[in-house]
Image (tube, rainbow, N blue to C red; front, side, top):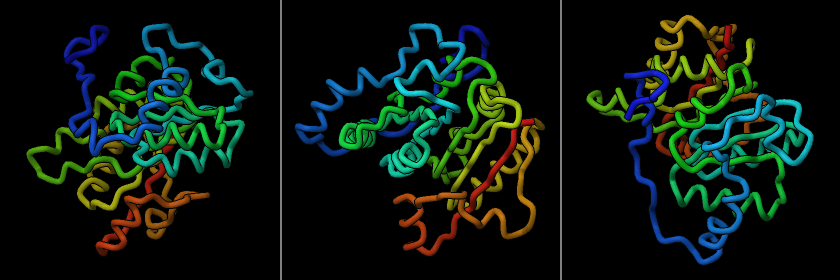
Length: 233
């Protein structure tokens, strides 16, 4: 699949499962009634000011790609009520869990999209996002599958386009090859400055970091995590 505006530029980036175990009745109802109100309408033009996507006053906008169980997204939305969050997750079970939490907590600074994140990135206006979080993405550990990793020159160019000058790209992973892959790709792109000041920075969780179930699993299995912060230049 290619972007009609950029011939030859891949837009399909999701290769994983879209659904796991059967959903509970409440989750099915939430997906049918709540998600449509929160889902971005990519058939309509994106607003020039993304704050207009939210029903509460918004000072900045963050994008989280592949939010998994939604623990981090919910934590950040509660922590920063004047920040608008766009969460993207194609996995149905994860989306159902997140929508339930949004409803229970009455979070009004979250918008969602349940398909490929590259579609959202291509829809967003230039220089409209303050921060992008890519946390524990699928590492595709087999070398023959590395081309499926979300971090690529094409997607970094998407990040660079939608991030405001000085905006941040945060990446976390417990897979050494993916950490190195991301560092090399960001260096080669040239539009991202790694903000590490010393050797311990990349082992230090982000400020206000709540942890995730993926991180907990990695620790149980004896793997440490890396936390990379890049600034869009």
